[in-house]
Image 1 (tube, rainbow, N blue to C red):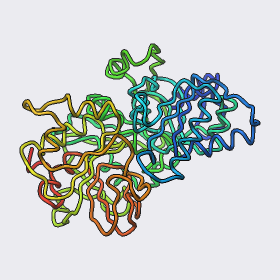
Image 2: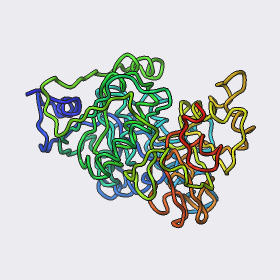
Image 3: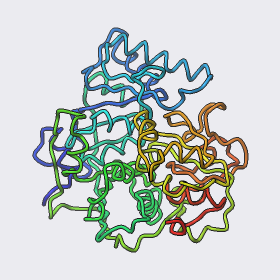
Length: 431
C-alpha cells in the first residue's frame, strides 16, 4: 500500500520509511511561526518549562510576525509587541518582522510565502489555525497551541498523530468567474465544518493544478474551517517558479502514490462550479450567490489571509473599475508587498489603488484588521447590526467585532459585485 503526500512528509521527518494513519510519532520541525496574539503565551510557557535562561533550539527556524492587533491604541495589545521585541533581542532571532519598521510584513500566512519560508516537503507549525495556508507549497503545515509551540521552541520536535487523508479532485477547467474561495466554500458546504476533523485535505486534479500559487494558498487556507488538520497540494513547476529568488532551498517534491489509501474521495466537474457564499453564522452554511440576491448589505470587506492577496484585489478591481460602490467598502491588503502591488498593478492604465479610491472604497493598512474583530479602534470592525459580505474566513457571531452583525463569506468577485449593487450579487452579471 502506498502513501499520501502528507504521510510521506511526516514519515521523512520521523526518519521512518512509512507511517500509517492513527500512528503517533515524533517529527523534526523545519519552521515555527508565531505572532502577537499567541507569541507572548508561547514565550511564557517556554520560559516556565525550559528555564528563564533557556535558548530556542534553532534561531534560524523561528519566525515571528506581528499582524493581528497592531494598528491600535490598545495598551494590552501594544504590550504584546513589547514582549515579542524583548524575546527577539534576548534570543537574537533573525526572522522578526516588527511593526513600525521597514521590516514589517503584514499577515503572517502571506508573509511566510513572500519571504520564502514555504519550502516543499518541509514541516511548518504556527500558532494560528490558518497556518494550513502553507500546504499549498507541498509541505505539511498546521496550526498548534501555545504549549506545543513552546515545546518546539525548546526541542525542535513535536509529537504528532498521522492524519487520514481526504482527496478532492477537480477535473476539467474552472469557468473564468470562479475563484478558489468559491471552490472552498462549496467543499466545506458539502462536508460540513466537522467533515475533515483531524484529517488532511488534499487538493488535486488538472483544474486545481492550473491555479496560481495565491489561489492555491486560498484553497489550503480554510482547511481548519472543515476541522482539517492540514490542507495540501502537490508542489510543481508553478511552486518552484514562485519560490525562485525567495529561498535557496528547493525542498523535496512529494506526490501521493496511485495506491495510497484515502479516508474519502470526491471528484468535481470544475466546469459546473458556480459562485458560492456562506450565510451566517457558519462557513458551511452554503448557498449559491444567485440564490441570495434578496439579501441587502451594509458593508463589503475585502482582505485577510484568505482574500487579501494581489490576485484577490485584481479580481475586485476588474468589477469596480469605472463604477461607484453603494455600500461602505473596505480594502485591506494582507501584506506590505500586496499594498505595493496596489500602486503598481494596472487595469487599462489605472492602478488598482486608484480604481478602489475612485470607486469610493476605504483603504486600510496591511494587517489582519477586522478579520479577527480586534480592539474597538480596529479598522473595518463591525460596531452594530451591519450585514456584511466579506472575503475573510469565518462568519461566527462577533468574528468581525459586533455580535449583532451578520457576515456572508464570498470570493472577491462576488464581494465586489455586491458592493456595486448593495445586495448579494452573482458576479456573472458584471463579468
